[in-house]
Image (tube, rainbow, N blue to C red; front, side):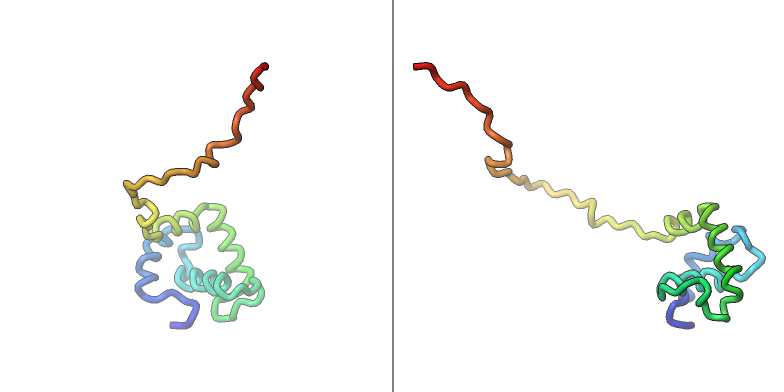
Length: 111
């Protein structure tokens, strides 16, 4: 396994969501690794290593998956929920009296 590619455990999570998708006749793992390589290294499509196949084929397939919503669905499917932000605390916080806003103008008393 190379540095920017999916591990076996990661691929098992992703694989079920790539079956039957656009371009299913191709090696989906190689394609996903090509996209991850590009994202992680920041290289241009044309600079993809030859082991991923023709750069234009990878770029067009990426575009088809994006238009079909595959990437978004895949992201939501493998995302682990983060419940840390749901923490509810019963303490209260009092605001400073200056947080109430500007004082209202009171009419001057007549003498």
